[in-house]
Amino acid sequence: MFKEAKYKMSEERFRELKDELLYLQTVREKEVAQQIKEARSFGDLTENSEYDEAKTEQGKLYSKIAEIKNLVENAEIVRASDKTDVVSIGSRVTVLDLEFGTKDTYEIVGSQEADPVLSRISDDSPFGKGLIERKVGDIIEIDAPAGALRFEIVKID
Image (cartoon, rainbow, N blue to C red; front, side):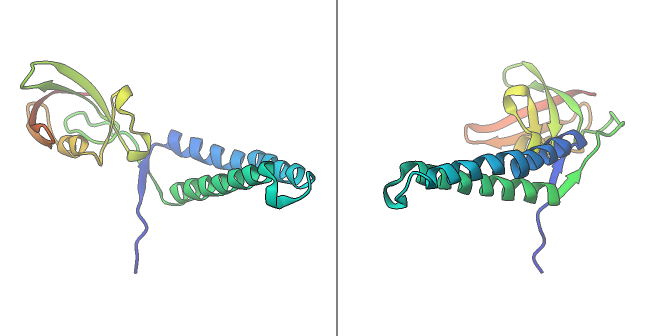
């Protein structure tokens, strides 16, 4: 039997998704229905661009609702570990780039919360996978298009 994928996320992200789903299913769905109703009142639907736009918006809305429903129904809530001796979801990890000698700190999060600009790295990414279950002092090697990248874990919070 086919097993649905689980989406790792924090309790906070789970609540955000549920709130967004509620908004889309109530407020936004009524707004789009009203747009369709108004567009229908303009007459001939074959040449009614307002109607076409409203129907397109409705399709996008239903697609977004289905996507968020899937995420909520298959959510796996992860809590940050209190342990700071190994890297896990919720850990803040400081690494030393062994090629350039620079230090950077990243937070390991579920894929639904990843945002590289904010240094939030998914546990499913190659870098995240390389960090999970590692300890301070461990050296990890990540295969990248530009070649192998080497990092040393210097701190785990």
